[in-house]
Length: 639
Image (cartoon, rainbow, N blue to C red; front, side, top):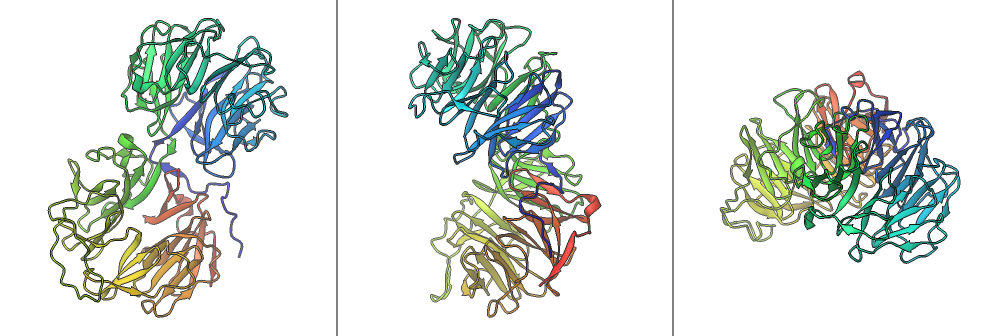
């Protein structure tokens, strides 16, 4: 049987949201300013043809999902040609990419492959010349990227870790480079460099440099120590006043194309604007908005877009006086969990991490087509687990405790009421219980709310509840790595990353069960109605009919690195996904045969949504099986 290649390029299941997330950079077609491009922090480029009102996925750069695309350039000579500079998260690498079909397909340019590209600029007076700033130095091409040459001194201890690049609009040999420790300038194409630090606080990280296109001797430099202006080509800077010290990390400075005195500064604490060339500034947004880039519509400068962390694209039609989300089609959320409402068809919840006040929980009532934030009361907490009780109440496990949803919002739950343990000394017993009256306040990674006993897996251990969450006892197990709790006949089974335990007294005492020797660790588990325990790990999937006395491997299953197992009563199948494959499987527990679908994404947490499947991608939110594919597998196989 043939299985699709890993990391398939075709994304068969659409990413449906929640809208928003991290947006990094803008670019516009100079001939059609309403045609915009948007770079992200996970290798994707989006486009909009209506000035940012709606977005569609355009292309993914490279083969992974860890490229930060901080710079996109539309070629002034040929708008079908695009360049993108990228760097990798948490490790060295990146490059410069080029497209000759308006971003549909991309090629990595040789000579810059592997470079951590933090800045990229095209010479306004010669579109064949591009200059890139990288961790190792400054590079330049004079033939549209076919050949590159390092123009900063090789091995320089100063002109390296380049964060920003600007090229003089009239002279392509005059280049400004902002480093993690002050700016530099060359007027002869890089043969000689001199430091332009006069007036700038020592050791300032220069995030961006803006040259006035009409008067190139005027430039702005934003640094970790504030914003600076020079009126003589960088020979002397003066610090711009009016922006608080706490907001000094300014990643983007943009000038109104119709009024040089109007300048916007996007900081880590909101958007600032000056109407008088930097003499005074006013903050236009909340200080909680982290801004990565700004776009000002040249045809209508009142139309301003911001690319932000967590809240995606924000748009203003009144010159920044007010902003609204403009994320239709843009989904870059880090979703930890998804919950399908068992009482309301078509309703699903998504738990978001790294969203702060813009994250939390999102809900959709139309199979994921539209979403609304439902985070009132969470206080910006990350959500790692979602669960639902038999009466329909929704619970959220956060980075700081357990919460219950009510019509008025989320309220803290998880009240602890402990009693002395009388367990036999030969068994594991409740260990150093938390004082009664306190609440679960550590990170809650998993919630299990099926059956008469509920379990909450936290960083401080496992808690249990005998009254559907009204009160909790524990921690009954001190370790954090439990990934599954389920009922196996008269036993409660607890699966840890490296062990399996069982209890015959509703979680008061625990004993060890034999685990499959073929797995180096346990990463997923589920129980089917016939009493079979299924577990998965790096080496594949195993099952046992007799509570661990004998284990069997599903040997011919063409995938390992199992990251989720779910029993699906609608299909009478075990749903399975892998961290190494974009394919998901539905395994028949009686015949040990399976069906599979290629989602096109690396996913986990598969569930049934009506007659379709829904899953969570790693950095692109929730993905849903298309209606045209529902109930139809791409192929079948067997053990």
